[in-house]
Amino acid sequence: MHAAAESRSFKRAALVLAKVGGNTISIKTVARISQDIGKELVQARDGGASAAPRKSLTSPPEAPPELAVVQCDGGRIRTRASDQGPGVHGEAWRESKNACLVRMSHKTFLSDPHPELPRCFYDPLHVAKIAEKQAPEPVDVVTVLAGSLSEEELEQAEDWRPKRLVRTCLSSLACSESFGQQMARESQARRFDEAPFRAFLGDGLAWNWSIWKEHYASYVPILDFIHPLAYLYAAALALEQDYPRAFARYLQMARACWQGKVETVIEELAQALQQKEIGDEDRLETGDPRRPLQEACRYLRHNRDRMDYPRYRRSGLPVTTALMESLVKEINLRVKGTEMFWNDPEGAEAILQIRAAALCDDDRLSRFLATRPGCPYVRRSSLSTAA
Figure 1 (tube, rainbow, N blue to C red):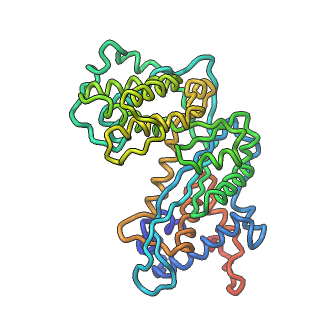
Figure 2: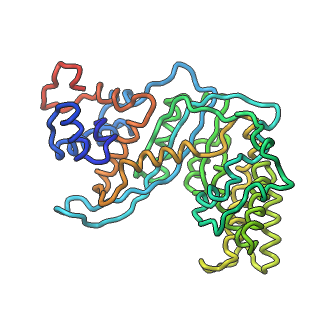
Figure 3: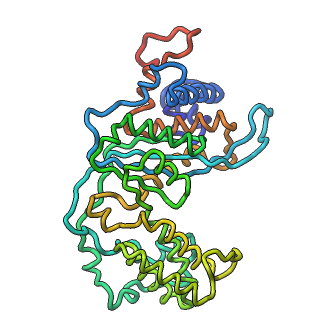
């Protein structure tokens, strides 16, 4: 199962087992056992089948974390209709729900430990990549910063960011309501609700904040800071024709948001819309050059209550979903690829469960395999390696 979870395909898993472990197992057998274990993980996760596997999924800590951080985000997995014979039938993209629940180190501060925008967000190429846009021309960052901040000022900041200690991972094709319940059960098992400091981070997806409202209302809601940057960068390009001026405009708005002056940025964007005779409810075509302004203004207005970044930093809370973005990439490494399709929903759900269990820091997959009852019609070996 570890080979199936970590390798790019069942074929590669069988090859690794044969070449490294000396275990000759067919590709179909690896796939079949993965399907069985995936189903058992679903039953254990949801409390089905029996209570024994349910207990083996979690190892409750002796004490609650000092800082509990919950993050969630959507992913994509390509599926096909099952029981349709050889080949791909009913090809479709399905949204997967992913979450990481992280026990983190923690310390608080009397004042903002990092009042200036991080150095990486002054890099035009890095910001253009975040916004999924091409930088029109090279920009001399030093020139852009002239009269603003020195390199020394940018570097002089206390390392305030909390560090990851233990990560628990979840992934499923379930709807947001069901996935929220999965997250809540996991939080309770990890004693997250007892933590003195709790934070819930997400992007602008509505289902993220529906889960927060339903299950994590006592957690501090934080909008991932990276996502507003993409909107601000696109809005700056729409406001200024000259790229250096546009980048300087982006920096001005990004720094204001980082320093908690979101209302100032909203007012600036609203005035720009008013000058162009555009209202919030006006429907603009996709290619309309004014649309980025409207989208940025809407996004900030909708999320302004989750953008008090100076307060979050003073409280020692994270302000980006970097851990979540990393987890999505780790899951995608196994479930997404050229000509890779999963039976919908059994095969897709099974591999998501196995991959997520393998990525947990609590050695979840090994513990589950060691305690699972197995097939009632086949005698298990007494060797410890049988687990």
